[in-house]
Length: 304
Image 1 (cartoon, one colour):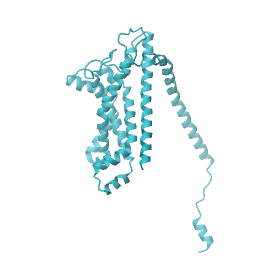
Image 2 (cartoon, helix red, strand yellow):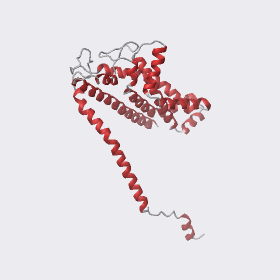
Image 3 (spheres, helix red, strand yellow):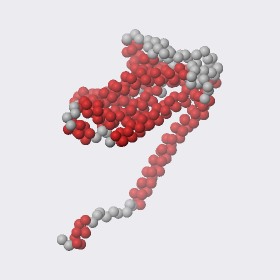
Image 4 (cartoon, helix red, strand yellow):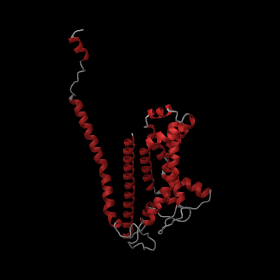
């Protein structure tokens, strides 16, 4: 074999310049994507600006965060939303206490053990539950928990409805994060003689934990703003109520709905202030999810 033949054999492929039509199509697609992004951004910025401009005075009131509206007249701008913030957080926390462990176990089952008709039925039911409107979940809890079993309207009933809305989100986020775990980690653990259940608990779940926690916090942020369950399953109260099984309990969505009926200027200020407060809480959860994800990912990288 001559040197010329060897050079020809190892010569790389020839790259042709990009045609003008492909460049035009690429730039056109980029412009369309940018325009679509700006169009979608306009109403978002508009809503945030409006809520911030109209609700800023309310949230900066010295009594807004640490007082309730007990004894406050409709035309009087006084008190605060401490009772409503407490109600929203308690109802969401109870829902998370039920839906997080159940959703994680269902997600683990679907990824690690799910085979046959039971896995297909479970996946189908999770998909159906993910598309159920909040009003349907609230009516189901009202029919089952209050009408059939005879319990009272309460914050616990609201939490049960929120479980139905939060559960499919936790299942889906857990399932997707577990699927991202490399099979090589599982196989290495099996090769060392580690049982499957211990591999899942000690290897698979810790690897997927950052994404799972982010999904849980985002699901929690999603159910915080639900209005239908609180309208149907619990009554409004201007004072704080620590009993989750009995009595009315306020929440931020319920306070907004109630104050919308108030024709006074103070009612409008409370509406915008409560809306801005809810946005701030949801934004805080999103930021917390990002920080937790980054912290756990960084620690996992250092331990390797």
